[in-house]
Image (cartoon, rainbow, N blue to C red; front, side):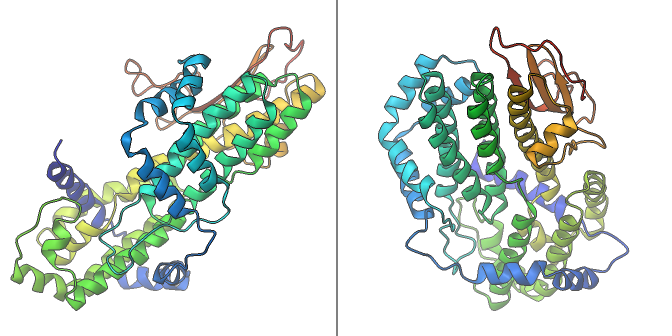
Length: 441
């Protein structure tokens, strides 16, 4: 699919999102509420200038991304298969050996405490995020290497890699753009796969499981709302450039498309004249989504309302401008729910494995969640995560986007859309099985 085709599809989707202004509030009221809540002001201050420090890891991640341009896609794919149990330990070791030099570069970046994205604040439309991709790849690489080291008996090396993964998750979580927040979900999935494999590997080692549970506790639940706030600041910056004439309508319409647009002076004038109104549309929409971010039902209603109201605004230059600027936030909501479910299942699963090693039986879901310090709620429904202990294993999962418990079935081509997500499956070693189990589902 060509870049212009992708852009056209994106703009259609963005258009649907742009008209999502909930009634009966006026756009002015929504903007006032955004300012009263500090959502706009605080993030504007953040976007106005992020000071680089000598300890800023973003440039190191960017350098690592450049170093990987020759291509480690096959190796990274293989490491993902290894984490999912479909590639061998031997193949994973060979892939890691081929990536040794690149891994050293990523180690340095992942070990650093600070992260601030590399941006050109003078040209908000000219944004590249190579370092964010490198952070995602670092999470995948170190998650797999932790499992390799554990299965080869190098426990210390495994926990050192888990520290790298935790910091990579923290770094990508600090990425202000929503693309970084979405990539955080990808890193969390690999982290969860590694924790699952290690919980099974150390199922009889109380001390190792305590360290594993502590390592899980060093990762925080993802917060996409920060990304929404930063988007508001970015779009208001672009609108300021529209009003000043620094950015034209044709530039906005072709941003990211790779093709120069024909300058249309009349359209530019209309866009500039409508910039104030467009700002209200953009900020009002974003704030309404931010307010509803934890409410899946309201997000769905807002999304449906956008399609209905889009026709009412057809031809309005302000809406056209908002169409270019506003992302499809409702489509991100499912990704965020998936990330939260993955996080909670991994934290609860590692804590449960530790308690089982201490007491000889699986704890209840509430006991494990309390030990992990997280909520047992399933973000995809009104109820808890599914929790299924047995004499030989423990399975935790979320019902996923269909809101229905399908019995812990993974998504495949054959079972769409009847599948569950965020599965965390601890399999006890042979001879280490429980005589009794807790019921706790």
